[in-house]
Length: 465
Ligand code: GLU
Image (tube, rainbow, N blue to C red; front, side):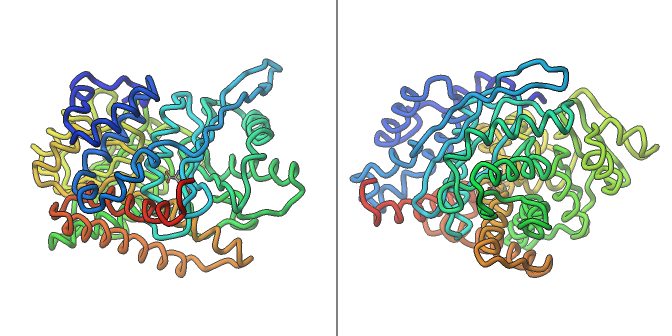
């Protein structure tokens, strides 16, 4: 379950340049050669390239102008030192990253991840995904991603504040509401955004609300931003089920993770009548036969920054805490991976299929390995790729930027209506694009092609930059 585990050999073998058309194989070989050791980035690029052959046939101008090569190369890559002192006076040196991937559609936009596993390849895979995801939202946002190998777990508030201040002391010169707008991701929530915003404001002497999203509601944040990624993924799942004349009502749902995405996935799934059985963290998972008690989970995770093991202790007989095996062993109709990359592998996919899963939709970024995606697709399971299914988070960030630009703040209901419409539109766009290119029901191809077309057409119009 460790987020940083190695990519298994079988998965590696699955993505070889020879499996692509000659033009795409040559692009992929170049990506491998120029970005050595960046396994997750290679994986994210491969997953997109393997769906692009039909669009390159239909749009030869993309090949002539080396559009795909340009999309695979970030516009700018920033790496910097982040020195800070802990409460005992000891000095630590972390590394900071910001990958400004593509600004054809708007300012670079995407979260910051603080986790010990963060390295260049991980930030680049996340930034690459963001290009397609942000394009799919239909909003004017480009793509970027950043973070640090800093581990906020077990750190005091003042340590986290000092780290955030040091991180922003360098990053601020690269940001701006019209330039680059970070937000949260794993390890970066409301507390960290607050410290980052405070330091940005001090260094620039500007009240520039639109420079960060995920802010507190009293100082420029948007309603629904906290809930948006999880809510959005459930709405996307519902649309996939409806397209098959099915529903979420009464379905058994397995959710992995217990962070922001997982918590609001559980909340929305329960509100729509689903029975959510599980949640997890890097140490183990909970199975609660009565359904996850969200008040208790929120108290432990949001209030106390505790572990899911505490949930089992306090919940009573209905909940079991399991430390061996995988959450995917729990039989379900719908699985919503909401923890981290590569958490659902080929074996897990077979288990889900054997247990009769009908839909899998990614709340996390790239949680399903390529071989697992293939198993699910071949078994006819509705599969929602993260770049479409979890786009509700960044879309609501886009709505936060819009409110900031107008110095306005919308009600919860109005913002949720906008989010719901955006998720429906993303579903329609993936569904229709997949049909148009001859892959009905294939949301992976639909999301990749629809995302690429939007960003590529903007790049074509703007010339060779
Ligand atoms: N980190 C989130 C994502 O993966 C949100 C980014 C944002 O709101 O800018 O899309």
